[in-house]
Amino acid sequence: MDIGTRIRILLSLLLISQLAAAVSAGDVVEVWDHYNVTIRTDSETARIIEELTIKNVIDKPVVPGYGYISLSRDQGPTYLGLSLPFNKEEPKALKVRDVSARLDDGSLITDVLVTEEEDGTTVRYGFWTPIMPGQSRTIIIEYTSDDIVDKGLLFDRISYTVQPSSIPIENARIQADLGGDRHISYSSVPPASVGDRVTWERSGLKNEAWQLDFEYSALPLPHSPVHWADMSLGLLFGIIGLWSYRQWKVR
Image (cartoon, rainbow, N blue to C red; front, top):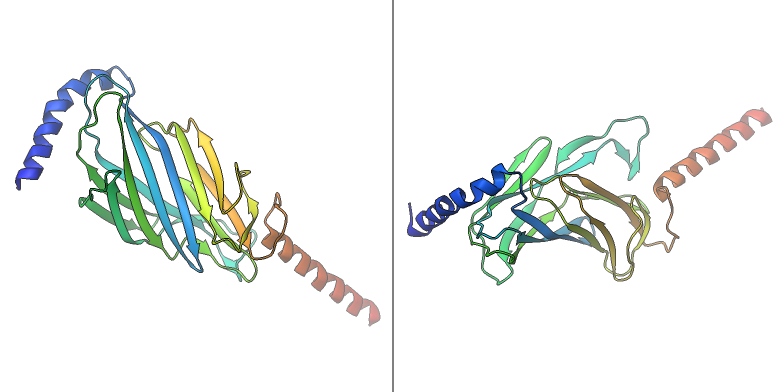
């Protein structure tokens, strides 16, 4: 066991007794002051940057220890980017690569482990730096995924979920950087702001999940309360039905 690991273990043991009273009393020890996610798309690939600011809200130092990010996507049958109706979506692992972690001062976090199972992927990182009372530190996790973008003929979709956390999430933000030539045509939550980056915000998540689904296209379409891709599918079926009816009438 190297010296750095021994020091981290000793710090944890020294602080755990101080934190025991607060935890047993049900008090919150630390919170995610900000949980910010940026999704940058490039064709079928997305680079995700998660900036997680953890704040010590008690009057004793804390060592966060291991943190976990759970990644999955609800996947159902699709055809040319269109969801097929009457088919149940199930959670599937979000395949990731090029995973890195660092602190806000630029120091690298090397204790990173990625575990993939059928229904989800977990990124575990070790953060053993003490945080003083009332202070905050930001952990920056980056990874690339070829799975997150559901490509279609005219419309692409992305679904991202901020998973429930054992640490309360005070403020959450998801930003989509679509490259400037694509436009949001649908989102399950109205955006807080639009521009080069489209932003959605939530506060007071506590241990709730927040799932955001959005659709985008190169077509400058207005924001719709339903998927434009689904409306296109309905229109296509309508045209086929009308054509079939006219053919039957002619006969």
